[in-house]
Image (cartoon, rainbow, N blue to C red; front, side):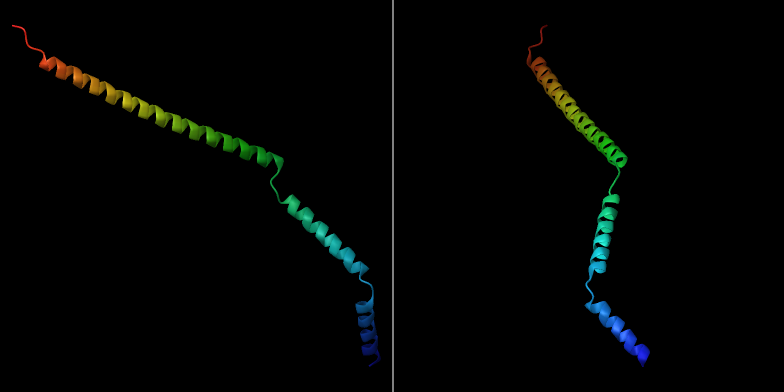
Length: 99
């Protein structure tokens, strides 16, 4: 029974005691969490590599678009040349033949 009273007294003393130790612990845990979050980000080397990969990807995309535009321009030029050839053949066919 005496042990129970001692334990009850220690428990009451713990509850009623100022919580400076707990505040320090919370502050320490908060600082640790902030440091952990900051450490989880990518490193400068990883960021540089990602930027390099992104620039390569963008350059490849630009090259593909340019090649597509060039192929369209070539197809349009071929179609225009075919149209002009067709007009020339039609005009040649309508000319009177000399005997």
